[in-house]
Length: 154
Image 1: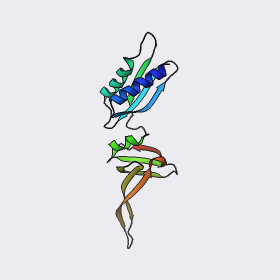
Image 2 (image 1 turned 90 degrees about the horizontal axis):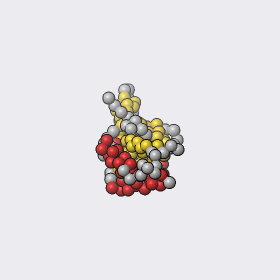
Image 3 (image 1 turned 45 degrees about the vertical axis):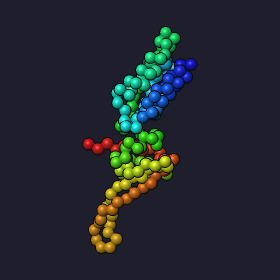
Image 4 (image 1 turned 45 degrees about the horizontal axis):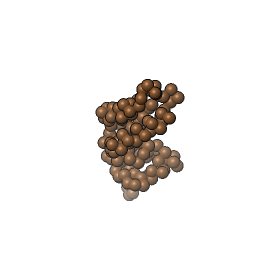
């Protein structure tokens, strides 16, 4: 019963704030509500508070005993939905594909079907000795991505 109430309140809050979207929702046996959100421009503490209050203030505490935790998708958490990629254009990604290929490059483009990564690499010259720097590119369809993470650089 409480699950349906929380899901309904959560959907209403996300309709009100279309820049935010749901990554994960969990309700434990002891009514501990855990929600993970992301946003098209990132997530602020105020965004988490907005979602939390939209749920917490609309459930009768006399009827249901619960706790609620609203988190943002962490910087090191894998990207799970195509919508998450757009805000990372220009950043370095590590991508593992379903056929166990690994790519690391700058996220150049995001479209409806997948992503384009670009990176520089050193290769032997076609003629003569030595190496040259060349630009490489890989198009990866969303359905081929096993895991994608933003590579944090310090």
